[in-house]
Image (tube, rainbow, N blue to C red; front, side, top):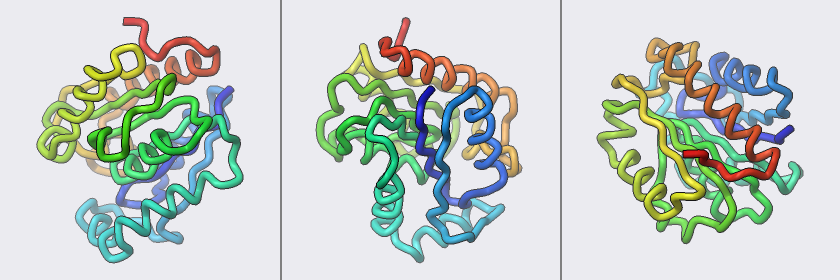
Length: 200
């Protein structure tokens, strides 16, 4: 089973983030869910983004990176929206990472250097999400797949919600989340067995 570092979105370590961690953990994986906000939680995305700005995105990036200290080298790193920033930085910069799950966001890989050989990655987001599709994350994900076809996959779900993966928020879409979880668990099983990320 995998050790998974799961980094929360701009609303904080919500009950929905804990639920997502629990659903991965129920399959036998060990999920680490650090709190980058020191207990602050928001039920409104704009308020959460304002809080993130007040802390500083560089500070949150370093907190995310630091949360991996003391964990096994062979982590699978995962992030939701804002959490992708640190998750992707760890995937591209921390030796030993076994895989990456980028949920509702994706940075252009070249901003962090080349994608590391042998590290599989999945990206998930909604087709009409103004953040994921409108801000270029979907395009970045497709470029990542084009450059690393044996390692990378992108899954796009119908809808326009951002943070659809969090059941504690009004933006939640359970059908899309359930399908995404099936794919995450299949990914983790393949990574655990040392198989390629994609079977397409």
